[in-house]
Image (cartoon, rainbow, N blue to C red; front, side):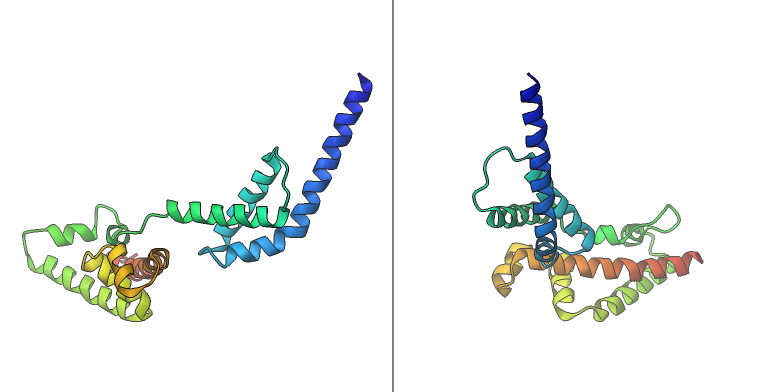
Length: 189
């Protein structure tokens, strides 16, 4: 009985040592591989941790460790990209009850104040759009303002859908920041 416990403890220590060695040997290469394919460092770290978590939980033999690790990383990146939903123009118009951008567009009263706020919004949006690189601006305008689906844009331009999604995301982040500045100025924040 004691021999079985010692054997288990020895096997557990050896497995832990092997996993630690693999993590030390592959972390840098995997992080670089992942970082080139995701938008930010936090996502890269999350995916790297998921890869190693899957390695620790794996109970079967792994014949080609390098290929296995990079395949798992690629699959985790793909899963992360599938979960990303394209950000909508509505996401830009964040606010509280005092000033909400969507209310400006659907307010039928057409009073001078509302018209003025609409014109400020559209002026600021146009300025912010012109600050964007052409690739980001065009995908945002085509998808969000003209309502053309990503699939159709991809077919017309030959640019992969994931690239289009990424470009639009960067555009939305920039526009959100610029429109937040306008909102803060209007509210004197």
